[in-house]
Image (cartoon, rainbow, N blue to C red):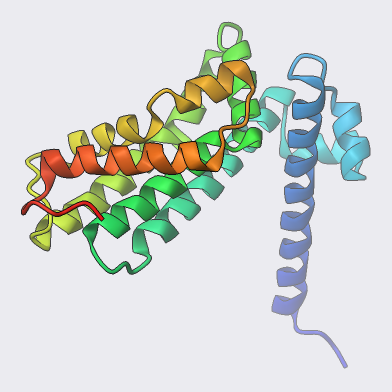
Length: 217
């Protein structure tokens, strides 16, 4: 039986996509293990099980591979945040707490912290990597969070004049000093400390923007 042409094409596209994903994941692992400068295309090719030629047909340089890693990790984080923002909750406080916990967990993931350190280390040589990270990560997160807060305001739960500013303030409240502590001290933040930080951040945010005062639970 002859396989339809469109099925062959679809299979080829999937294979190409899967191979590209394998290369990006392998690049991420090599970058995290060796650092950006010490990472080599040979090591990435060996880990991915592909030739250097295959890599170069997709990524003209190591810098392009690193940018692809940044975009993929940022996209994964944005997807998690979007899911958290769409998860039904019993009330506004619970919704904000769920979103805040997800955001802080993303900020404190060892993998994300390690990638952030790599970006900072290479900023002087490759400032465009910082731009890729900011536009793929924080910019998207703030825009989605602003939309979420805007929906809460439209439902009468919050009083917000500028949802973009409110989103920035929420992120700053959630981040506190925990992300910097984890980034610089390379220390794990205990869960009770994280929970308390989110609770305090949510209460401060509600004090600023709640349409009606809510009693803390």
